[in-house]
Length: 302
Image (cartoon, rainbow, N blue to C red; front, side, top):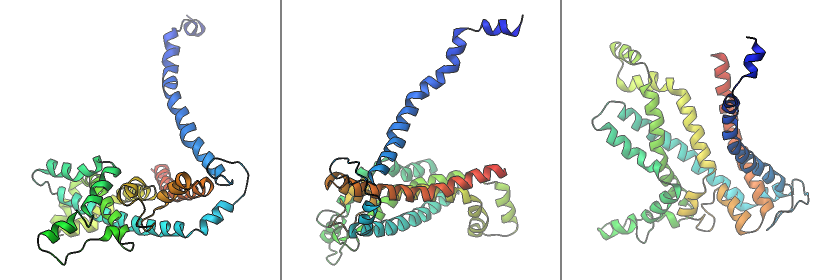
């Protein structure tokens, strides 16, 4: 029987089997293209227009970006992002690594402890922000509780202090994310060849030395991935700020995402809001592109 005859007798179900995955994925691809990349492109266009309450397509060039650079509130939000992001990433990494090393010792009830540390990650940022807003509220939280117990000189009024309110955001964000970092590093530690550790122990190396000089340096990809994820969370943080401080007092705890929302939807300055959104996108790409480049370069050399 010829090849032509065999192809001609192919069942319609064979064609359906070839096209079914494409048909299933087509709606998802359409939603991603329109609802994600399409709106990114639309936001980029609006950032070069004089849009206010409603979109306008009168081209004004870089005028909105210049207005953004002259806005004091934007610079406060950018400074807060540097403080918040730096402390959030650094403290989360330190706590996450320490917890992972602790659990790597095969301690008793490891599963229970791991679940407790991971539980905050199951909560939304809105819930986290609301809970910490109550805890740090000077009128009803830890401040009032300790003073009622007799610590009259105790003060924890950071939530209403413009100079310290951003640290309240750091506390809440670290509480939620450090368990996730712990899970990443614990998975990496469990993948380390135990023969290397045993060889170091035979040579007389102490446990801290083994982790600091042998184990943790071998987890460089995990460190890199954790930093990328935490930086991405920090840059787009909105719900935590909205629930915990709403950018206040005044706009002392503003972050770029909160700035973008307020100017776009509350103040009716869609052009400057779109410009701030594009700068946020640029910051995220500045983090993701080197990461993707290093990953692809590593795969080419493998």
